[in-house]
Image (cartoon, rainbow, N blue to C red):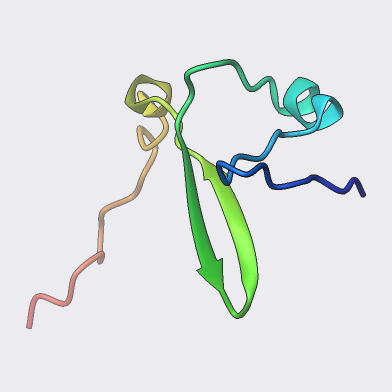
Amino acid sequence: METVTISPKFQVVIPKFIRNSLKISPGEKIVMFEKDGVIHMVRIGKLKSLKGKLRKLNTINLRDES
C-alpha cells in the first residue's frame, strides 16, 4: 500500500506500479466517488470495448409477461 499526498490544487498522483499494472494512460477518464468515508476511483472504459460481450446472453424468461 502506498501513501499519496494531496497537492495545494487538490491533485493526486496515481502511483507508478498501479498505473503500470492497470495500463492507465494519460487522458483516460476516472470517476471518483465517496461511500461510507472511503474514496473510490473507477476507470471508465471505452464503449467499443463492450462490443460482443453480451452476444451469448439468454433472454428467454427475462421478463415476467403476466
